[in-house]
Length: 180
Image 1 (cartoon, rainbow, N blue to C red):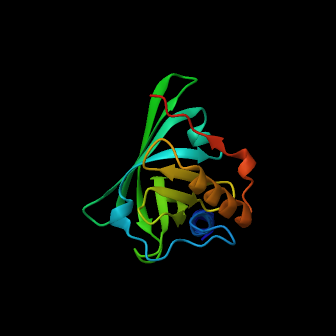
Image 2: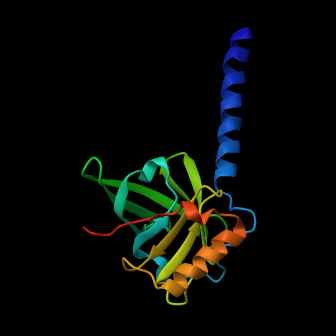
């Protein structure tokens, strides 16, 4: 009986922590609202990262792109690529995204290291699906994306104002260079 408790208790606690971590990590920041009437097929393809917050997975990266394609099972294949200008190497990560609810709401969860998932929430997009503002699970993660390596000033200001209203400190955004 003691052996059973020595095994089951740590395993149960580990499972609870994993469940709690996963359920919290696919959230959306308070005040942010995912785009409704989202067209996932129009979102597929290549996006250029225009701005982001600094975090360890993209540290020292420029020329960052994200490519989205549909997997046969209906999930979305995610391919992120960027150039580490310190190490002078290209880095690539492949992952998978799934819709949190239904495909018409731009709330997704993405994983590059299963079983760990993180929130990916498109909170603003233009009508032609050329520019997108993406929120992570918390105010630590924000991306401005474009189909080209630049973004019109009017869209940039629209996205920055929206992010500020939600609570993002947009002064800390890194503006990504695209020169390769």
